[in-house]
Length: 225
Image (tube, rainbow, N blue to C red):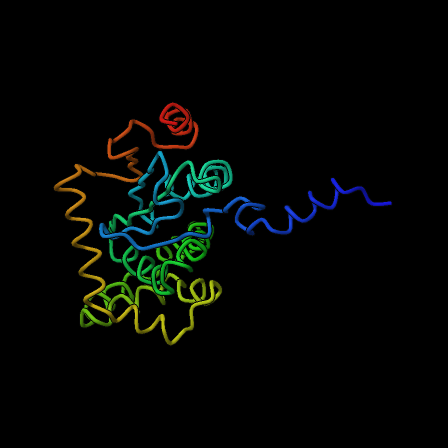
C-alpha cells in the first residue's frame, strides 16, 4: 500500500528541473577569451587561474600531465575555479603546434593540446634528428609554407587528426598567416604588459604567483578559495 507522503515526495521530485537534480559540470563550458586564451569553467568562478604556456615547454607538459587532471576534476568541475590557457609562443615549431591545437576551435582545444603535450618528447626528438640541410630548406621557403613544413618535420599533423580535426582543415590553419600573427601579437603583449618571460607562468585572479608546478600551485589555489 502506497502512503500519501510517498506520493507527494515522488511528485515533487518529478517536478524538479533537471538542473536541480544534477550539479553542473563546468568542465563542459569552454570559450575563447579576448586575451587570446581558451577558458574552461564557470565564468563567475571565485578564482580564475591563467597559465601562459608553450607547447614546446617540458615544464608545461608536466603540468598538463600532473596538474590539469586534478585541477579540472577537483576545482573546475564544481565551478570554484576557471582555468584559462594562453599560448606563449616561443619558436616556429611551437607556433605550428599551436595553430594545429587551436584549429578545431575552443571545444577541441583541450583534447588537441593534451595529445600534443603527451607526445612532446617524440615530436621534438624528430626535429632534433632532422638533417641540417632539410632544416635550412624549410627556412628558405615562403613564410606561408614554412609552418606546414615544420609540422611535417615534427609529425604534428597526425596528432591534430587524432584529436578530430580534418587534415584539410589543418592545412588551412597552418597557412593562415593572420592567425599566426595574432598569436605572435598575444605573446608580445603578454611579455610587455604582464612581464611574462618564460613558461609556465601562472596568474591567480590577475596576480602573478611564484609557482611553476602543481605541487606549488595547488596550495595557492586553496588559499584563494
